[in-house]
Amino acid sequence: MDIKGAVALVTGANRGLGRKFAEALLERGAAKVYAAARNPESVDLPGVVPLRLDVTDPASIREAAAIAGDVTLLVNNAGSSTGSTLLGGKLEDIRLEMDTHYFGTLAVTREFAPILERNGGGAVLNVLSVLSWFTAPQVAAYSAAKSAAWSLTNALRLELAPQQTQVTALHVGYMDTDMAKHVEGPKVDPALVAGLALDGVEAGRFEVLADDVTRNVRAGLSGELPGLYPALVS
Image 1 (cartoon, rainbow, N blue to C red):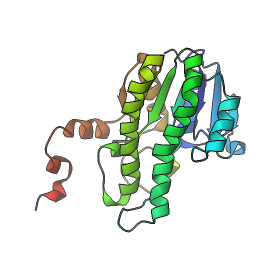
Image 2: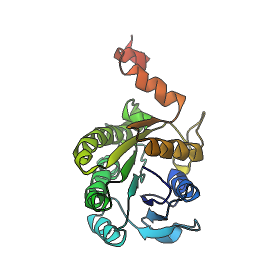
Image 3: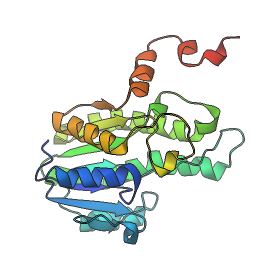
């Protein structure tokens, strides 16, 4: 689809990658960009339309859809990162990860799918992660939720195809955002990631792999598990 002239809605658009998505959409000529956030007063990007939307609150999602009935591009970006392990983490934190990344993405897409259909089909972009395919104890809850969101994205792509709605998955490693400020090592510029993802949407791609780490892990899925998890080898 063409970004120029599109009407986009970005969840979690008040900071990090979401804010970069909103910026990039404006730069590419989107006709309107709804910058959705739980607290719309925190949206400070000129040119966007702040919109209250909490992806874990069904009433909030319905209210946002009633306002943003002209959307042609939905960017499911809102995220959480509790740092919970599966055995030692709090169950409420683990549930929050799933409620945000899986059920939140599903709920928003279900509400906006009829809107996209009425407006000609459009597109959905789901922000996933290299951790959709790889995990470690310190990111286990997040990774499980992103893995579920990956499967969800593939299923939505099939279900939305008859209404001519394309679905693109973005997979990326650590980015230079507040969510990853505790992580040491290389981080990707979120502005670069947003640009690559929107390139993928315009090209009608199913997946966008935004960095070398992600590409290497994706390629490693066809091998034996110790290739991705050397610690399994005693």
